[in-house]
Image 1: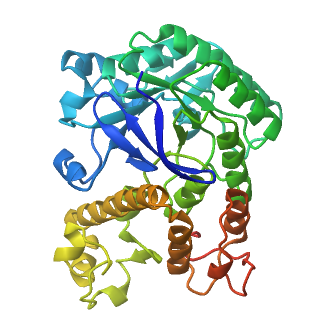
Image 2: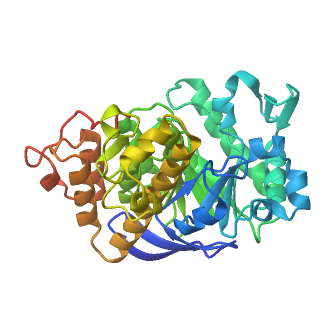
Image 3: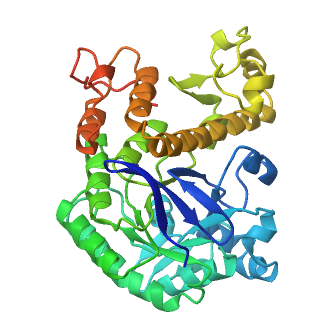
Length: 406
């Protein structure tokens, strides 16, 4: 078990910390790129190091299908297999209950998937999930939880919440490498504050190395999203990392960090790159648009990344419509953008200028002052005055920006 969160700075609920993992010392808040099967699409391991990536996320379900955890174990783990010297986190495979529900059958024993590779059934129990992750060898491993869409209501939410608590005990019992792999529990409960409270208290009682807030980013409204994050972060231990799963929009990360979260992951930066979209301080820039064809500016004039230093929007416009190199360059830029956001969040908290950072961030994204109402509500709870960013003064607009609606 690592030395948990060493808090090095804070502003109200927001905190900057240092996580000492077996393979790397990380600074939070941090964003983790998703490398489903041992690769972040479009980037080499050395490029990920260059842009400042601290942790890569791998997918247990997909890695077990191919190349298999047995092979990874024979090759001294996923780190060695993909030549990645820094930290890794593997999910439990539970998310596939939602994303591959047409292939899955969920019972108390576990989840039976129909393999998309050969059609054969594959039973994933809490014990098997942990055993697979023990063989893969990531620094942080996730407990198998009963995942449902946040838009589901009724008895299924309660069933999933209590099953997640029963399964965490089975995961703890199955974990054979607690000294070099850190097991995180996942707080479920849908959008029900009572069930979230029951689950977070149950997880905290297990005294785990860290905790995740699961079941979000699945179609719920933003008002419900931030309130669940605020409720859970307020109830989780101060000295343990807090991971909001599946969050990748920069605005969401800034809001969640203000509410006291530390870690995030999402395919969004690389997936949107493959569709020709770049992340910029103002929101997004669609490089496929015709007006990019003769634009000789870099993607983001304020960005020091390799792509912005060397290539124009016009050049990348030509590539994204015809050549795979375009999505690779955009993936590099987008992940650099996310790593820079992580660094800026950390330094602004440590240097006691976090409120100014938040206001500057919102002014760039919402130059007309039309900050979404849910952001204003969240910042009020976080104790950050953003009235100077809003128009008219001291009020927020209900309409979201072009970026948020992407």
